[in-house]
Amino acid sequence: MDSTRLDALLVRAETVLARLEPLLPAVREPIDWEKTIAARWRREGQSGYLQPIDVNLDLHLSDLQGVDRQQVQLGQNTQQFVNGLPANHALLWGARGTGKSSLVRALLAEYAQQGLRLIEVERDHLTDLPRIVTQVSKLSQRFVIFCDDLSFDASNDDYRVLKSVLDGSLEQAPDNVLLYATSNRRHLVSERQSDNANWERGEDGELHPNESVEDKIALSDRFGLWLSFYPFTQDQFLIVVKHWVKVQAEKARLDLHWGEAEEKEAIRWALGRGNRNGRCAYQFARHWVGMKLLGESYA
Image (cartoon, rainbow, N blue to C red; front, top):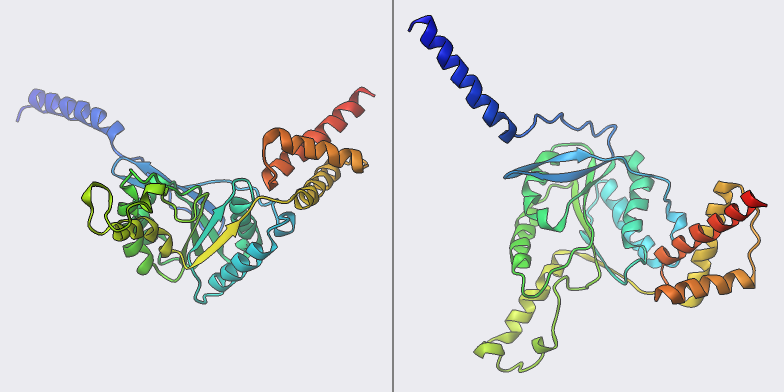
């Protein structure tokens, strides 16, 4: 082959490579799990990768008020897991803003020094669970795979796919992997009144409607530990508000004056938002302390 033809062939090869290169997955540096305590699974083409994320470890178990029972149970389960003892996958379900996700993050802060690590996975990416488990199964750290706000519509058959994935991945999961998930629904899949109607003869002539209903709720059975979270009473709400006001005031070095008038202000805030939960209490604390600081700056 003469040099002219060879040069032309090399030019064509470089052109083809230049077109293909953007389609190829980027080379990813392996995660140093000694220094990284949390990562997020990112979908990329037909596969994906773990992306390290910075997490704020300022949230402690002592900051979580009104969820003592849930804190003890999930804390004990996590301690067993970190110690290499048998532990269960956990489903945290219940009212929004009551501390489900916060409890998982606080446990990471509590046990990170003992080797606990967190991997966040979106619901739509849980079918990649086998890939994730393979990547961490041989490591010395203990990994909680965390899926926040896990739920499905009854008309969406994705829950069946996920159920089969969880069956295969979780039943055979190595000892250093657990799944923690949060949801507003106990059974993860939305349920309808028609599920209970015509029990003897299902909709559209279904002969065994009870089996259909069981299929919908079976997904939550993959979790050995169920923890329920409920809206706060007014007294519980005010306890949480006062805690976060104190935390925010101490950070800002603000003299705290808290009394009946401030409690009424917090109650009006909750009524305006239509709920009493930990998230609402935290938001009010930031609002109240911010307003006080703003007033001092103009005084």
